[in-house]
Image 1 (tube, rainbow, N blue to C red):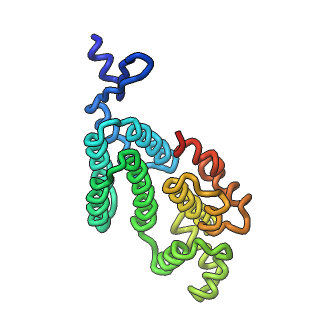
Image 2 (cartoon, rainbow, N blue to C red):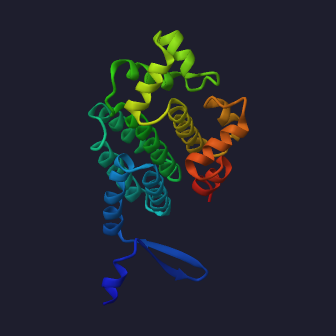
Image 3 (tube, one colour):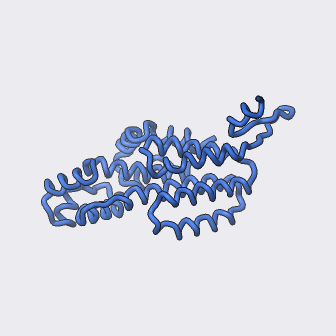
Length: 240
């Protein structure tokens, strides 16, 4: 009866003096990861955020480096099966370099940062759009850092098309307005920067994603998309 109850838990702790000694329920952890990974690529934004938080909790709690690398391999390879095949060589290179990492504490950081990177890339590349909408999205991804980026300028100076027509087609094909699309992209890029640095100043992050002239606006849209201010997001997800 005791064994059946214990199997429900991912990590169990033995109390030794004033310290805690963790022991890992390996099978349970692997099973949970296999459940979380598909949500990273197929779930909505809330599911992705929740899955990332759970993965972070699991990875940062592992004290055995070999097992940590095994989990990292499992996560990245499994994630790769849900992404376009063109990204697989990059995944192989990442795992090769990850296994050479000597600092164990850096492994979860690298894994989570890489997950956010491939999700961001695949979320756009896996969709099918018409030729000029694809061209427009490519331009946005390349120039989102420009604080003066507008649909009017792109339509008239890059696509040489009527802005009203472009706006209607963009909303029809992507399911959202240009402003919302750009906002979500900038917030996603900001999250990647915060995940990789943690200590980056909010003002600097705002500038890096095209909101440098209006840091208040950056904080506002970040909270709208994530439910947290940038500083609260860092504190919750990347600081012990």
